[in-house]
Amino acid sequence: MSGKTVRTEIVTHEEAGARLDRWIKRRLTVSQGELEKLLRTGQVRVDGARAKSNTRIAAGQQVRLPPHANTMPKGEGKDAFPGGKFSGGDQKFMQDMVIYQDDDMFVLNKPPGFAVQGGTGTYRHVDGMLGYLRGDSDHRPKLVHRLDKATSGVLVIARHPASAAKLSELFRGRTLDKIYWAVTVRVPHPAAGQVRCWMAKGTGEEGMEDRERMYRARQGRDFAKHAISDYAVISTAARRAAWVALKPVTGRTHQLRFHMSELDTSILGDEKYATAREVPQGVAPGLHLHARAIIIPRPRSKPITVTAPLPWHMKETFETFGFLESEAGNDPLAPFL
Image 1: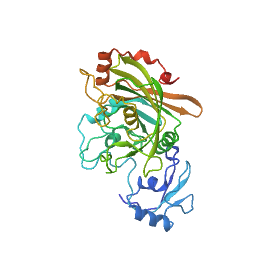
Image 2: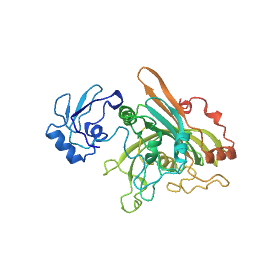
Image 3: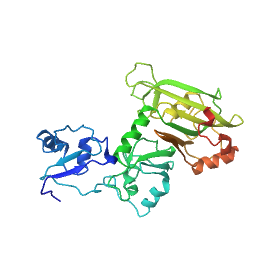
Image 4: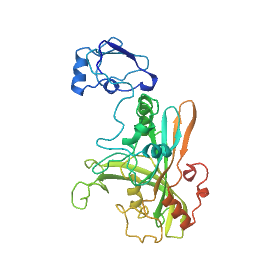
């Protein structure tokens, strides 16, 4: 519909900290260029003053929206991925993944093999289906971090823009703890420690041809990133396999998979970073890497700890090797203490 008069909206606490241009685009159907013109000519103002597109808005501020722009009803927007269609069971599928929720976030237990975001040939994914978790909210839930498609477990979703900003800062600032469980081929030595190295995505150079794979790199090399992971062996199946707890200090692509390969004990089912060691037979297929728990600090209360149950294939492998979840203790951080 078209707006006939000047409209003034007050920024809610849920949208505090959002960029002005993103806030406006949830209300006006304008391109970035059109929006820049509205800001440049003063047709959009914040508390009566001109503002830039990257201005961070605060709760309680008043934003003037011009009368001639096309307005978007609250809550409207694409919840599906471009060109995609959902089946009747997709809403239940998304809701069944939720293992924790409050006013600021959802935490999902993502199944293995289900993509977090779309890509070439991937049309059904978490990001494209987040609208099913919106409920009566004016805001579409938003991803604040990622998991590999083959990795299962804890995935945090922000319910509104202010929460997205705060959670994203926690992930960037390394002020929350993420704990993964993995089953490795053979047993890491020593049984606990820290892996540090520089790594980079394949560039087509000799020995680094695969652009979808990480390789060890020299410090200072273009695009090289330093990666740090803590690990601790919880239990072993003779010398055939180990159940390992992993705690990434940094958050690099394929970091845990690469680091276990660097120890010559690749994660079971990981063909991309497989080592030459003999793989145990008779175990369930699939990557045995699970985002087991996340511990999110809060300023004036106890941290939020959310634990994701194991996927079926890892449960089956645990039974095969005789691993008991009770061996890890009740505290997700216990293996590292």
